[in-house]
Length: 347
Image (cartoon, rainbow, N blue to C red):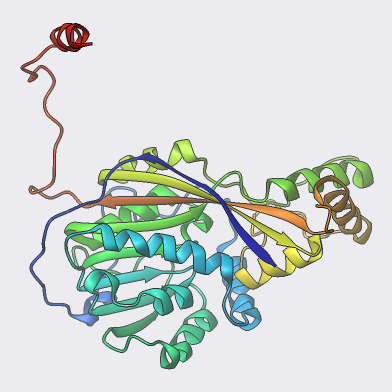
């Protein structure tokens, strides 16, 4: 498996903030109550993903994980790098399900985190993260482990300085609701950092699956989960009530020896299909046809096949009076016409 970073482009936003006084933290607050405001904590009426199946897939991924994953580590590093852009510290932090082990290993003192809670829907994944704690070089962070669901955060309101989610939130049925709960869990001026898979992810596999199913079965059924588009990420942050929203995107190309190796990697990441309206039976001839189409359409000269992973990074802050605010309409003291005349004359 070979990882290639193709490009990175900034979309919008800023995340530089001022200093913060250290605050106390009581770990028992994590079990005190659910966040509750608006529709953030209500059961999602729209069921897209089977959360029980996703938990089982995460359990399986915990057993399949072997060593370091270059793709996951690259995404995690890029996400945690944003903490180095902040002129303040985050004493209390929550890491939501996704790349827990990678986040803990690569944190390396960034963000000034003193107390960190690791949470995942999978008990086996939490246990794996706890067992890996002995190999983490940074021993200065007090770490807690919680089994919980991102859709129903067991976090008291205004109890955290930082919420991190690396490759986990895209499996929630109510993504805006989960983000609202993250905002409520943050203290004023707290930071939300998230990385989710975008809509261009596995575009090669989508094409191969579609063509193979049409040829072998005369129709198509959903085999790859729907994912958010880049244009929707800013709206998600705004809808969740975050201030100073920022969105940017990276696209990674991972090369595999075959399409079957790609599927095994997805299983080890816990990223296999969890749609409610999925076809539970995958015919052998359809699977072989998919691999053949993938190989014939996308294989390189050396025989490897590429897989695209689009990662959307989102940053947002809980509102605070010290944050920058846009000026009111009509408060400008210089007109665009005057600026145009001034610069026009100078040129």
